[in-house]
Image (tube, rainbow, N blue to C red):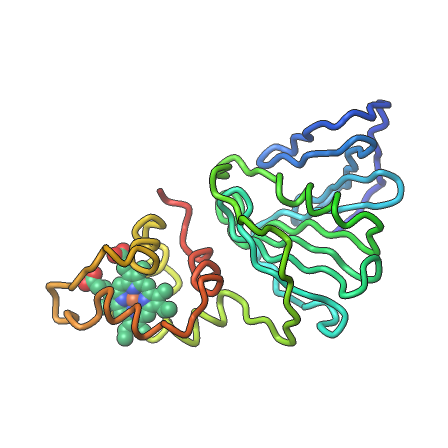
Length: 238
Ligand code: HEC
């Protein structure tokens, strides 16, 4: 919620710089400057060059994808400095919303960076791909960032994919069901289970049929992007 006045810091700097917002930094190309709002239930702010404006909100409740008009927008899941990000852009450049959404930003907060009717999409994607949180891993990035956007009438969220495929055995908290709770799982081990085919694990428990072979066979229909989205539900606990 935005309650108070808008302050634009006009320190007259037209050089590119990195703006520090505390838990994260956003690069500002030449001519872009910081905007600050006063928020109540989340931290809001942004940057602008006078023509194009991006605003962020960063907070604790999870953002429900009230998807932009799906006929007019395209979607892409990417990795930005180790974080899974959902990108949205208008089908017709300059007519609609550009969004970067991360459900598991710093300390489990969500992060949303959004612009409307943006003139210079390329600059905005350059900004998106350099956003860094305190725990970002700058060595992990998509190779084809912001390319191959897809139409997606009802793009499923991480929670929906999880509910459909995993929720019968795993709980989204630390509660143990048939399998361990999602928030107790380590990300490196999660990667091994789904992406490292040299790693094979057969449990020694009554669930001996539910090891890596079972998971890979059973979830062959999920794309790497689906798996990355589910991984976003894990805690930052490495
Ligand atoms: C039919 C039950 C079942 C379903 C469905 C299932 N799992 Fe599992 N999963 C298990 C069991 C049981 C284990 C524990 C094996 C062990 O360590 O003994 C496990 C372990 C795992 C592990 C390893 C955790 C660790 O810390 O070692 C991961 C990762 C995992 N599951 C992910 C998933 C994901 C993601 C899905 C959905 C796409 C899924 N599972 C669906 C039963 C299931």
